[in-house]
Length: 93
Image 1 (tube, helix red, strand yellow):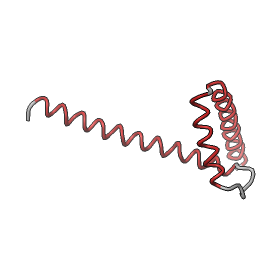
Image 2 (spheres, one colour):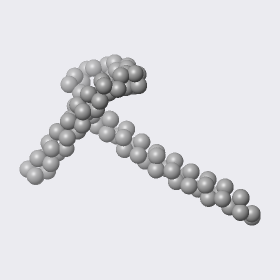
Image 3 (spheres, rainbow, N blue to C red):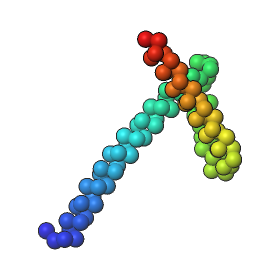
Image 4 (tube, helix red, strand yellow):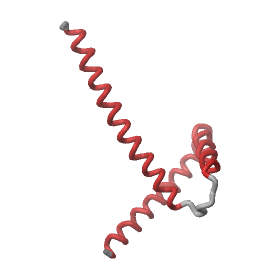
Protein backbone atom coordinates (compact mmCIF):
# COMPACT_ATOMS: atom_id res chain seq x y z
CA UNK A 1 0.00 0.00 0.00
CA UNK A 2 1.45 3.33 -0.95
CA UNK A 3 1.66 6.45 1.22
CA UNK A 4 -1.28 8.15 -0.50
CA UNK A 5 -3.59 5.20 0.11
CA UNK A 6 -2.54 5.02 3.77
CA UNK A 7 -3.29 8.70 4.21
CA UNK A 8 -6.71 8.27 2.60
CA UNK A 9 -7.51 5.39 4.95
CA UNK A 10 -6.34 7.40 7.98
CA UNK A 11 -8.48 10.37 6.96
CA UNK A 12 -11.46 8.09 6.38
CA UNK A 13 -11.03 6.67 9.89
CA UNK A 14 -10.84 10.19 11.36
CA UNK A 15 -13.96 11.14 9.42
CA UNK A 16 -15.84 8.17 10.90
CA UNK A 17 -14.70 9.11 14.42
CA UNK A 18 -15.84 12.71 13.89
CA UNK A 19 -19.21 11.50 12.58
CA UNK A 20 -19.66 9.28 15.63
CA UNK A 21 -18.81 12.15 17.98
CA UNK A 22 -21.17 14.47 16.11
CA UNK A 23 -24.00 11.96 16.37
CA UNK A 24 -23.36 11.57 20.10
CA UNK A 25 -23.40 15.34 20.64
CA UNK A 26 -26.50 15.78 18.50
CA UNK A 27 -28.21 13.07 20.51
CA UNK A 28 -27.38 14.89 23.75
CA UNK A 29 -28.64 18.18 22.31
CA UNK A 30 -31.84 16.58 21.12
CA UNK A 31 -32.42 14.94 24.50
CA UNK A 32 -32.03 18.32 26.16
CA UNK A 33 -34.60 19.79 23.78
CA UNK A 34 -36.99 16.94 24.54
CA UNK A 35 -36.50 17.47 28.27
CA UNK A 36 -37.62 21.08 27.81
CA UNK A 37 -40.99 19.78 26.60
CA UNK A 38 -41.67 18.66 30.16
CA UNK A 39 -41.85 22.35 31.04
CA UNK A 40 -44.32 23.35 28.32
CA UNK A 41 -47.14 25.10 30.17
CA UNK A 42 -49.98 23.41 28.35
CA UNK A 43 -49.90 19.63 27.78
CA UNK A 44 -52.71 20.04 25.25
CA UNK A 45 -50.55 22.24 22.99
CA UNK A 46 -50.58 20.76 19.50
CA UNK A 47 -47.10 19.39 18.62
CA UNK A 48 -47.38 20.85 15.13
CA UNK A 49 -47.58 24.31 16.72
CA UNK A 50 -44.33 23.61 18.53
CA UNK A 51 -42.74 22.39 15.30
CA UNK A 52 -43.93 25.49 13.46
CA UNK A 53 -42.63 27.69 16.25
CA UNK A 54 -39.24 25.99 16.12
CA UNK A 55 -39.03 26.50 12.36
CA UNK A 56 -39.98 30.16 12.85
CA UNK A 57 -37.23 30.55 15.44
CA UNK A 58 -34.68 29.00 13.05
CA UNK A 59 -35.64 31.52 10.36
CA UNK A 60 -35.52 34.44 12.81
CA UNK A 61 -32.10 33.49 14.18
CA UNK A 62 -30.63 33.83 10.71
CA UNK A 63 -32.23 37.18 9.91
CA UNK A 64 -32.34 38.85 13.34
CA UNK A 65 -29.17 38.40 15.44
CA UNK A 66 -30.39 40.77 18.18
CA UNK A 67 -33.53 38.73 18.72
CA UNK A 68 -31.46 35.54 18.63
CA UNK A 69 -29.26 36.95 21.41
CA UNK A 70 -32.33 37.77 23.52
CA UNK A 71 -33.66 34.25 23.07
CA UNK A 72 -30.26 32.79 23.89
CA UNK A 73 -30.09 34.77 27.14
CA UNK A 74 -33.59 33.66 28.07
CA UNK A 75 -32.71 30.04 27.30
CA UNK A 76 -29.53 30.23 29.39
CA UNK A 77 -31.51 31.70 32.27
CA UNK A 78 -34.07 28.87 31.96
CA UNK A 79 -31.36 26.21 31.90
CA UNK A 80 -29.60 27.77 34.88
CA UNK A 81 -32.85 27.79 36.85
CA UNK A 82 -33.50 24.19 35.87
CA UNK A 83 -30.02 23.19 37.08
CA UNK A 84 -30.55 25.05 40.36
CA UNK A 85 -33.88 23.29 40.87
CA UNK A 86 -32.26 19.90 40.25
CA UNK A 87 -29.50 20.65 42.77
CA UNK A 88 -32.04 21.75 45.38
CA UNK A 89 -34.01 18.55 44.79
CA UNK A 90 -30.88 16.40 45.14
CA UNK A 91 -29.93 18.14 48.40
CA UNK A 92 -33.40 17.43 49.78
CA UNK A 93 -32.85 13.70 49.17
